[in-house]
Length: 178
Length: 129
Image 1: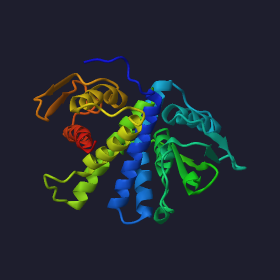
Image 2: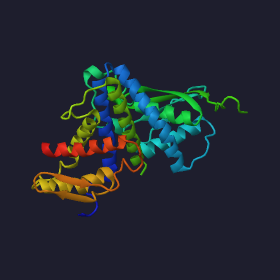
Image 3: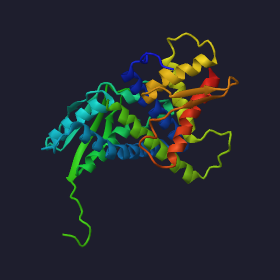
Image 4: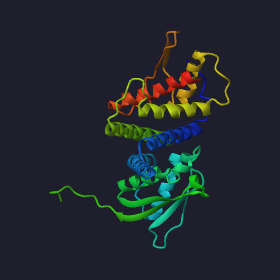
């Protein structure tokens, strides 16, 4: 039983599969948990778990080396957005101290077919991305905070995710070793 | 394409989440109930099919539907076609996949659970059409 290659556009199907699966997961979480705050936290945690694996996948596929500074890090994350979500965010709104910046997304495949109902207006639907950024960077010894500033699902022009560098993490040696 | 690995990771996290939430709730799962994982698979499969087949004419019969699932749908989602389709011509179909996408990289018992969820989602869909 074999027909010629699938008639569907693979890239579009992949993207929709991620969108619909994520949507079904969020819907399930909302049923399970009592309030949107908990759901948002859970999504961030989920993103964190994915991030710690995505970074390995990213490093394996790109063979990229150590980043020189935060700007370099931002560029690499931009590449990762392109690789995994198929979108290119703009890196913008650098703080004067150079320790905070934003990713600005005009389109977001995770929210393509999504509308937030009125009673879920406080839900941070894209928190999985914030968690993924935090998890991935923790694996390369950077402690960061990541949060959603603007959200297209709530009527904003675009989606803005802000990242703030907290500190470098040192590998902790087990007790008794030098 | 890197996109595939994103879906694999997302899938792992979904399984993780449903197992954790089932543990904490200690639900009694009756045979007829869809488990959380199956339900997520079901609603995703339902919407996927809606979108994939909206331009297509209606299927002639059950067998035609199953062939579509085994070739186009399976290729789109699992990157390969079904290896073997068998039927007793009385409504029971057995789909055999020798390299099921989500099992090739896992070794734990949850893998069996996942497999069942995905197959179940397609099965339920079929009866809805």
